[in-house]
Amino acid sequence: MNTAVLFFEDALWSAVAAVGFAVLFNVPQRALPGCALAGGLGHAIRTLCVQAGLSLELATLAAATAVGFIAELLAKRLSTPRIVFAVPGVIPLVPGVLAYQTLLGMFELVGLIDLNHVAAADELVATAVSGIKTGLVLVAIALGIIAPNLLFRRHKPVV
Image 1: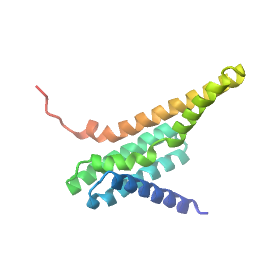
Image 2: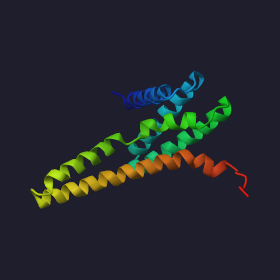
Image 3: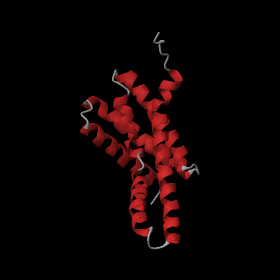
Image 4: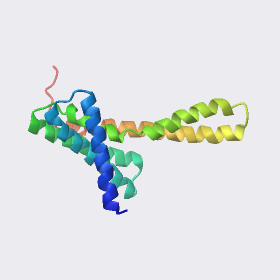
């Protein structure tokens, strides 16, 4: 199959996931196309970055930052809080497989500790790597969402 077709199919299903999450949390109907745009474009950017050779963590940071800026633009255009677009937009970026591998590895470690020290050490390393990657991807998502706030918002001093 053509790479462009696979790319657009990936973006389409990511947009569907973002809209599904938005509907689940009662996002106004007029904001759903923006949620689809943010989710589809965000995941497409991450896919392109990974294919270009970036690590998953850096690719997620780039995609989440793009989602943050898209959410900022849509929020101003539609007079809606930006979180309405940002959170559903990053849902397709959540590292579900990595988190699953981490938990599965933790469960396997419980059974391996008494049996074989070499197998337990290998499983411990694989589990730690999955856990660290999961944490870094989640931090990248959080930093990407708040990037527009950090760069462009001027807050009044509290005092």
